Image (tube, rainbow over all chains, first blue to last red; front, side, top):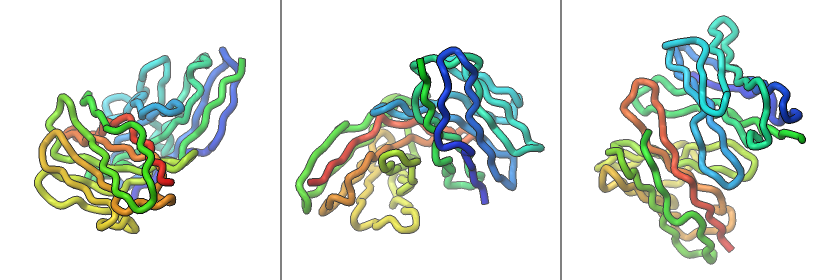
Amino acid sequence: AQSVTQLDSHVSVSEGTPVLLRCNYSSSYSPSLFWYVQHPNKGLQLLLKYTSAATLVKGINGFEAEFKKSETSFHLTKPSAHMSDAAEYFCVVSEVSHNRKLIWGLGTSLAVNP
Amino acid sequence: GAVVSQHPSRVICKSGTSVKIECRSLDFQATTMFWYRQFPKQSLMLMATSNEGSKATYEQGVEKDKFLINHASLTLSTLTVTSAHPEDSSFYICSVGTTSSYNEQFFGPGTRLTVL
């Protein structure tokens, strides 16, 4: 069975400093992995996705994530945090089955301090 | 990606009434749609998978007679919360499943349901 664990429920950084949101997954197959962001009272937005083409994935708004099979990790990073990055972030793994379910992490709340 | 809309964005209803939420795929023919529920400060919980022209598949613990799902066309799926109670208050989100091998989904903006 597939699963995903977001290692931090809350992360707080200062504006202009790096962001690291950690995610570990469990999968018996080659997974597809996603990071979604949800701003307060807004819909979910896809930040980036790993689809086995390249281990380092670049997404929108300066975010990127690296797929490390040996560590079963897919951590999300950004070199310099912006106030607008404050939001809830979800790491998601796709289930390899005919029903195409997504397995969701519990989320990491990112706070950016001025 | 697919553009997905939901209507209404917010609804307040009295306990015991039924509420219908629409999910529309505006630019993509969606044979599969998903309905999620999200409680405050929590992750998304999959409620059911909706397949066009057939019965929805519900997740364990989700009452199919309470949460009626209809997917009558390739662009519209509806979720009806029957005899709503305060514990049904939540944020309901739908998504459109794609046929890509990556299982990517595109999400609607969500519907905030408050049952008084």
